Image 1 (tube, rainbow, N blue to C red):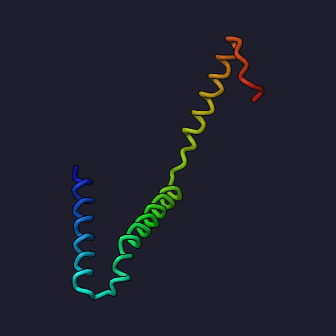
Image 2 (tube, one colour; image 1 turned 120 degrees about the vertical axis):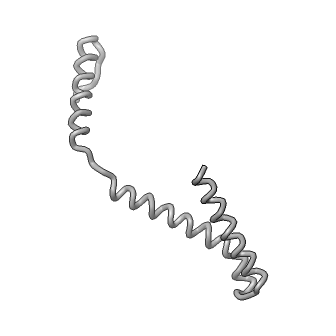
Amino acid sequence: MKHIVKILSLLVAISAFWIGLLQAAIIPRSHTWLLPIYFVVSLGCYGLLMVGIGLMQFPTCPQEAVLLQKDIAEAKDFFKHRGVDVGSN
């Protein structure tokens, strides 16, 4: 619930800022109407950046990989004894 409130308050603040710029005519009107598009594009860039950083910092788990390989070998043996073809690997 807190996250929703934070997002909505940020949206209200950005909307108020945008309406204020429209009313005050500080920035030319042709540029002011493009601000929501700039916001959406920059939000997308931020999202891609966060995904990229998350992928770069993704932890590797060598112990889990060894356990997974053991489980795969165990499952292959189990199915082989039951007469199921599990491939040559």
